[in-house]
Length: 228
Image 1 (tube, rainbow, N blue to C red):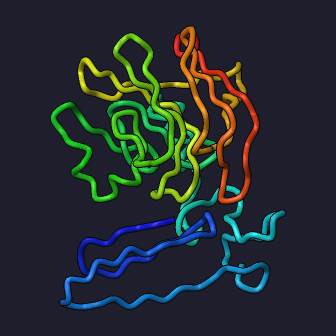
Image 2 (cartoon, rainbow, N blue to C red; image 1 turned 180 degrees about the vertical axis):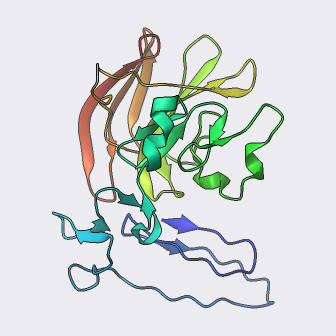
């Protein structure tokens, strides 16, 4: 994990990847103070919402996410019964449909409002404001649309497994809904970054990539942009 602080203020961050870097640009006017703690298992994994996983890593308990695991995963099921959004079961973050924002997709915006007016814009994950990321894939479908898959998000500290579409004709993000298999949640790839990808015959093909700081993937996935 890496982060850049442009103004003087106190910030608390958590590196879920096991790596953290600090970029400091000094113009001669001051400095900075930093403290850190390593959450080892089991001695330092004693918070109410944490547990030691099978890799002896201190992770959030089921149903919890975020810094200090203080947030509820997909609160209120993201308003899925009312068509407000869907839950990303891998990250525990709501994927809000167009016109809805917020951690549980309960807040509404109209065409005249700007999503950037929210103070937590980097943590919102909506069809018209995807999470910032790096090392994802970007593919063109030949119809004027660009398709984004995966990448690593500093906002969540995790690899992503979402699919996003951008219309170059209108310069806007398009809602992308992964269809359910009956009553079952849609089967989604493991979140990843630095993966290989290609677009062929209306489908996005994805192979491999990096799931975390040390686990390399070798699975193969296809996503049809027509049938979803």
